[in-house]
Length: 148
Picture (tube, rainbow, N blue to C red):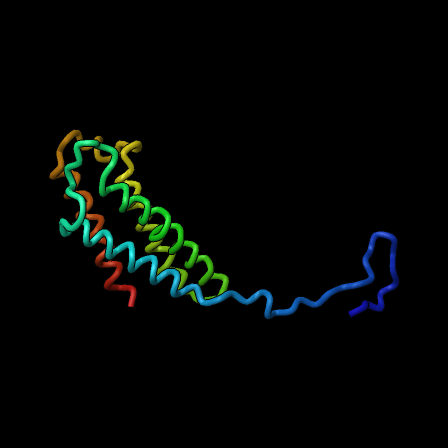
């Protein structure tokens, strides 16, 4: 399509109309759902005692690292990305849900990163650390109940 505007030295005379088919996104909902489901399933197996035991003599290597990788990259980053894509599509509810749970998984993963020293800040008081995580999970439970 050519514009009928008189050409000036600094102005282009040809303009292109965007084809809307090239700017459509696929449905990001399945990415958000599968990232939440798989990460939750693996964490549930871990918390039920399936797989590696919690007390690993090697310290930084163990089941926390499996959960950590999934929680940061799949449950966190992939789901947060799905939320941003839902925003682009115009789905406000999908944006809220996926970004919220993506942020939850990132926050949950940060609790497990040994270099941050969050668990060590409780100075060996495992009960207080578990209580703090329990409060966080209960609050997320109430948020989950309110979403639908």
